[in-house]
Amino acid sequence: MYPVKYLSDFTSNVFMKMGCSEPDALRIAEVFMAAELRGLPSHGILRIKDYYQLWKAGRINVKPDVRVVHETPSTAVVDGDGCVGMVAAVQSMELAISKAKTAGTGWVSTRNSNHYGIAGYYAMMALKHDMIGISMTNANPQVAPTFSVSPMLGTNPIAVAIPAGQQPPFVADFATTPIARGKLVVAEKKGEKVPFGFVQDKNGIPSDDPAVLKAGGSMLTLGGDYIHGSHKGFCLSAIVDIFSAVFSGANFGPFVPPSVAYLPVLDKKVGEGTGHFFGAMRIDAFQDASSFKSSMDEWITTFRHSKPAPGQEKVLIPGDPEREKEARIRKEGIAVLPAVEKEMKEIGEELGVEFVSNE
Image 1: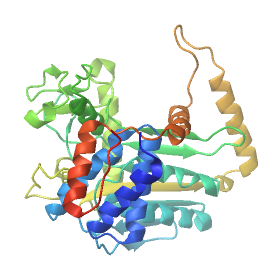
Image 2: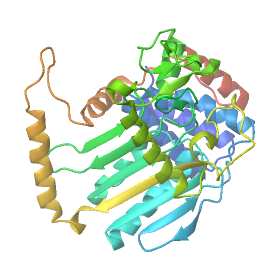
Image 3: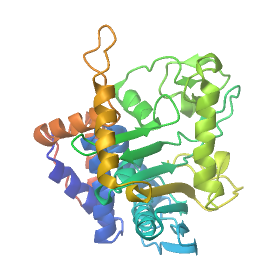
């Protein structure tokens, strides 16, 4: 187990060695730690290797000029200048919140960015302002639409954070696929299989191999197959793609640049980089904030007290599992897979940042 501060310091030092400014490196590390604390290691330090290799390949700009390129009182388009995704994402969500303070709601679409970590981090930024936060992003194409074997979409997550009063906030953060790509990486590093319904091989045959994407396979949309609603997952993923990319002028669908260096960038592009979408809605633009949060308390309590199904201890409200994991992980520390420890040591040695494993 590693203390949060140790891994946070290591992460920020790695990105500073790559050339990021200290403020940017600290932001990046904070998002990585948020993933680890919320029990989502698929978006934690495991991803440092991806960013490092993209940087070595010259596909990430560590000295970006993140700027607004189009704006109205309640909307904006932000250009990330090829930055590490967290940098543009934080600035974009801050802008959405700022606009909501004056206009009631704020909406920002972001282009020319890269993978931005967990969507929930940005949605939750709105909570302390008595706002509802929304965050979504498209991603490199590894997901086949319903009835297809062609990887056309990313895992395209959606996150919504809603404040409450006495109850913890409602935080929904989910991919529009049955599993995030990072979780396939975790399973592969552990030498484990994955359940059928998550991926298919290049011929469309269901597979339990987490490495099948490297052999031309693809992930499935939420639902897994048509009978179980994969067409609805396709719709959700398409909405994220359109909001994130068509709005902003980023690449959409099969043209989104890979977030891993071992996959080549396509010659054809229809926009700039990866796209994100952010929203902030001021509660008191709709009703008194205290009344809304009181009603949210009642909503959460009502659903939390619904009768559990046989074999289940309780009904979970979105955000409960992550919040409970965060409380535990803060005390116990962060577990890092041996394979990831090895990667961090190798990267640290190349950059001159020591990584001491907890052996």
